[in-house]
Image 1: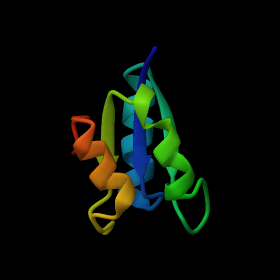
Image 2 (image 1 turned 90 degrees about the vertical axis):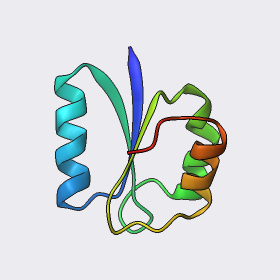
Image 3 (image 1 turned 60 degrees about the horizontal axis):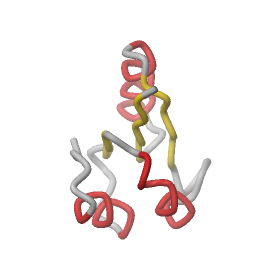
Length: 74
């Protein structure tokens, strides 16, 4: 199964998660305030095929690491 990571559990992040799941992705939802912490999620990037960053999320370590690993970031 394809794996994606969604960073941000606001309206856009939750909507992205729903769309990805409809397209048969296993989705890891990351949100430092209410869910998995971004520092914890860094260790899961090796299996990720697509990374979705919500618009209000800054380019923190998790996003930078995804870019370094050449994971498509949208």
